[in-house]
Image (cartoon, rainbow, N blue to C red; front, side, top):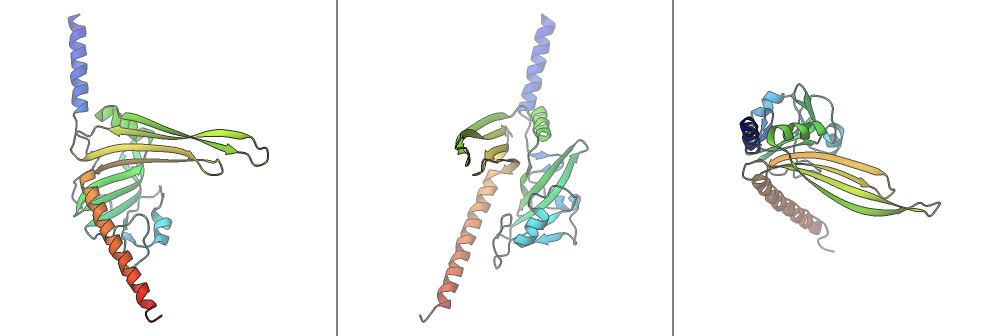
Length: 237
């Protein structure tokens, strides 16, 4: 009996240590790392800069193979495209694939630095990544949201119900402002065809909020400038 109690106590202590371990990174990708981390990942003077929509979709958008690294920037004089930032204090880098350890590779990796400090790590989600985090930091909390949609077949008039599903796993990071989650979305488009998207995010909410607020202000300034330019174009009418 004494041995059983000791074993139970040891198990509880082990679980307690796991649950209190701070979750701030994946492998060498640690939040608050200096921007010199990019050099370790392969950044050099020949790294391609992506500053337009065409190159973004060609080299970065959902590209999941290859070991190149790209820097994504947004020029305020060019068309806005998903992925870049106007704020010059923010730098964003994209890696199609990255091997965290020999047995775990992640894809579509986005790293965001604010004032040369890493504040966001985002990539495709995967069963392997989720399992690895569960084992090291304790089991995540799972939340499931569903929504039914009724589809009618054009030729027969028959109806069928299909259910959108959103699975959200959240890990306790034990660190203020840092959130970690994976989101698996399964949904059906207007034709009833099944689509899915699986993402993982580890980031500092405080700095993401700062960046979001600054981007919003810059966007409004650009829109105001463009509106004034259009008004001047038609002066005298």
